[in-house]
Image 1: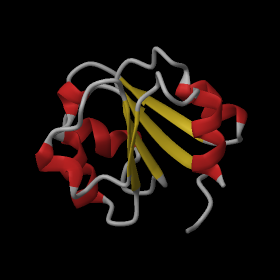
Image 2: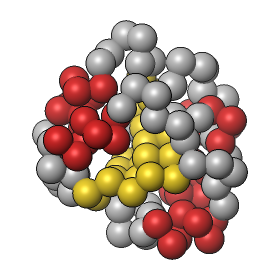
Image 3: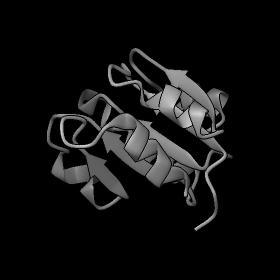
Image 4: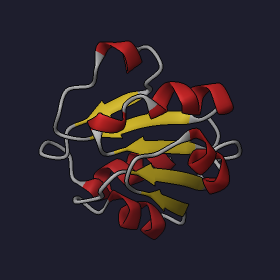
Length: 110
């Protein structure tokens, strides 16, 4: 697995995972609101190493991300359960109540 140097964090980042990734040296782009394919493309998803979703309501972005970048690692960092239709395209799902953002960032970058 190649090192993570670029990431897109989509959704509200209440647990500061984007900041934790930046502390690990990752170049992070943040997206909020209703996220569309053009927004993902503009944010650089085609070349990104990591896509982190913090809003399960935006789960439909995961298949789009995987379609645009077959090498991207997909992570959900949210309290709510991941919908069945995206589980097959997800590399990792983490509940922020169980694992601190700094630990997650450290593990994702290594």
